[in-house]
Length: 317
Image (cartoon, rainbow, N blue to C red; front, side):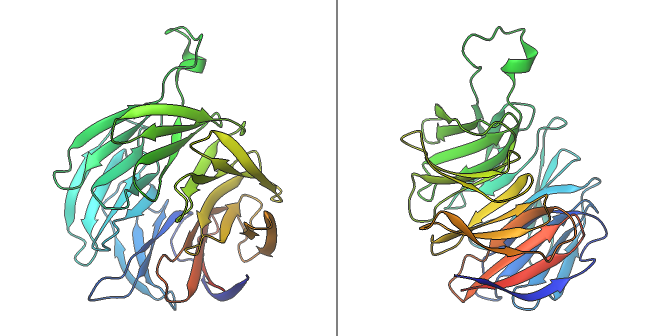
């Protein structure tokens, strides 16, 4: 397996790019790459040549996360302004605006069926679930206090939630916290199941294997990438190689590889059978906040985005 650079776009945004995801193809158009930036905009790019299709405005502070509905027609952007904007991809019409208290909107993900949008709740120590038909808040999955902490104990009582991931069957939701713990929930019952231990610094990104609903990959500021059996609570693999914080992780559609981005300015490709890094890409000149594999089967593509304001596209084979 290998990555080969296809194209990089310098100054793709006017400021740092913090988020990237792929919009699935629809009957009327191929997949698009969605990027979100500190410049307060969301941009959409053609998937084979990174030609800019359109720029969406609507936030008054930087965009921290972007999420794509599995049908490809709807997307969402979350911002430091504490709003989530849900919009029609083709018209840019606002479908819904979801409001949260300050610092309670971070990473977002639609569930595999597209029925629920999960939003990492930051300082609320919870994940908020929004119904995508009514755009009403339907559940709050709260991380329980650590045992032995007193209600007045501010330091141990709140877990700042940065990242969320759905299992491929939509039954489980995992979230990563500032203190390095990962919490797993049974979504249907709205119940906290357990923590996954092993990281000791922020977990800013995590993703389930597309084929194995138990297998979870996590990226942490402690420079490590972990593989967990998320049901058995077991750490089954620890991959190291980055020289600094690992800010993002995504898994390839074939489930054979993961890609990571780091504040060491590199993108790495990891062979999961070998549990080792097999390639390092050094396109970026600043930290890499997002990596995203194109989900469809039309030839592998990986995109990366960075504080250097650029977007890079790679062939994955």
